[in-house]
Length: 255
View 1: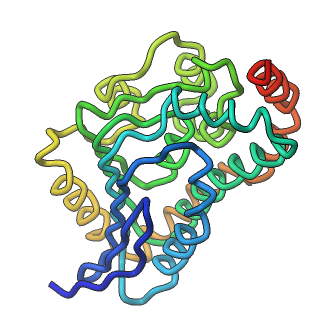
View 2 (view 1 turned 180 degrees about the vertical axis):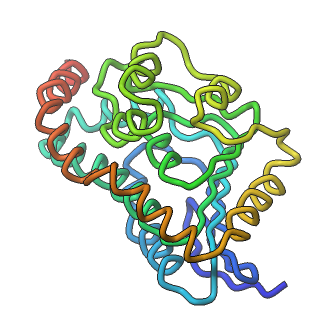
């Protein structure tokens, strides 16, 4: 198997393995602002996957819990005492939005393999992949709800697209986390497998997508994106709507 390292950061490693790119996320995040540290490298990898003739698809494996309420709370508490707090919140939201937009724009099959818990901020990124396989431990958590801050706009947008408005309401207005099986039943996840089988299942799902005729898959993916409209416009408008509530949360953290 031909292998080549494309990128290596404190949070992820991306390698080309024959004709697929495998991006492994690990290492953990002490606070949400670390997203800003890896943004450029992550987006560069996605662009390379999209443009390279060497790879036909992307498998992303997340083998850690994404930051939850404790991490988000710590980040908000830190931001509350910064004079540029609103600017930093907007940068963080924009980065996560850019991740999802870039993934959705890759004209090749993409699969996310989730090993552990996924917070709402990162669910918005995962939902941009063509397929999601997960372990039973991959609970979907809602730190935004727990901390009383607005839910991430890209997640709301993709939930409405995936489940319809009523389905999105049931997820957003619920009072509990979603188990992996519940996410599977809702159609957010495509497959739930034991941890030992996660990577193999992700590769199998990617192989199934790669087996489709390229023109068929690429055209279908392009047409499926049409009803989504422009996520950036939705996120920008939602920021204006939710800005007072972020101000409220930051002022609450500042005491």
